[in-house]
Image (cartoon, rainbow, N blue to C red; front, side):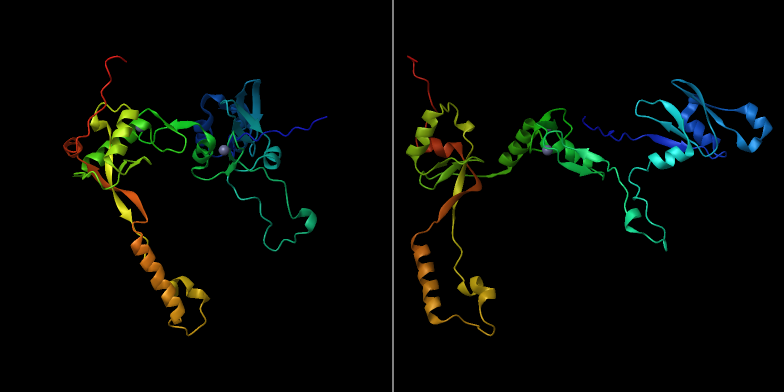
Length: 294
Ligand SMILES: [Zn+2]
Ligand SMILES: [Zn+2]
């Protein structure tokens, strides 16, 4: 036979202390009435009548009045409540100071509340934001953080249209420069590079770019290697007191730097400078035109 464990379901509850009737009423409203008849006999011991789904049930002083997830109210006897419920987020009951704590009594089973991802099962113990993190864990999409009403795909905080708006702003602000037809250029935020006018013309043809404005081209800048500093590189490995590397090492350092200098640039990276369309036109670059017989 398989075994089953009841899934913990939080409830809200208030203890009837015989004094704070207002708080009980605020909590349970018309679902409770005071037992006035009993109260006449002993004003300090008025039980509460809880109108449950299954009829009226008395809650004596010390008992708890609970509200479940669907909003139903019912009383729970004091001793049952103490054995069965623990305040969410409350630290696990500690041993009293000075109390001896033998092995057999030194631990108790605890139910941990939290949020779990429904795809990978990763558990986020109760803390502020745990629910959000668990939902974000493996969800395919989620509401755009700009609260625009659209959905953002996994791993993005904002939706594609908010992203487009942001990108257009960045593009508008970017410095515009002419292209000389020689310096490497690239499609903005795309790993497509052009090292010549021919490269670019080929791309326009292949992708049928009929409007040169569609090409968001940026100038590239050389990415140079830093000067080699062997002393710095060897740092912690050098014996104490060594303040200068032996000549042989310095020669290697010099040779390396000379090699790098002679073979610059190491590579090109897109710069934040957009290419003026007019400069493309000046170089004779034309948009794609669909041929008549196609
Ligand atoms: Zn997950
Ligand atoms: Zn959005």
